[in-house]
Length: 84
Image (cartoon, rainbow, N blue to C red):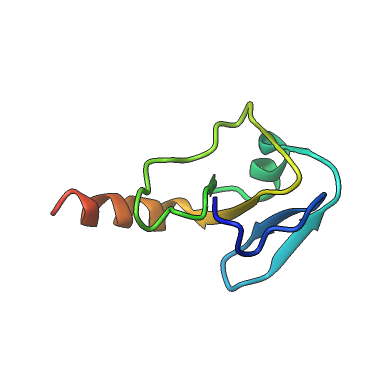
């Protein structure tokens, strides 16, 4: 993840529509996924590589930025990247 949008000691989760959820402590990916059904957590390069999603057992650490992306969007991005 690039330095753009990073803040030391802050975890940012960018929701569809641009709302940014900020955490000052690490958060379990499973907790975020439970609050956002039918969504996945991805890195900021999701539009170049939609297959790189965060596993539910991961710990999201401060200093990082992640996107919360609807699963249907990931599916469409994967179809596009496959040339379908």
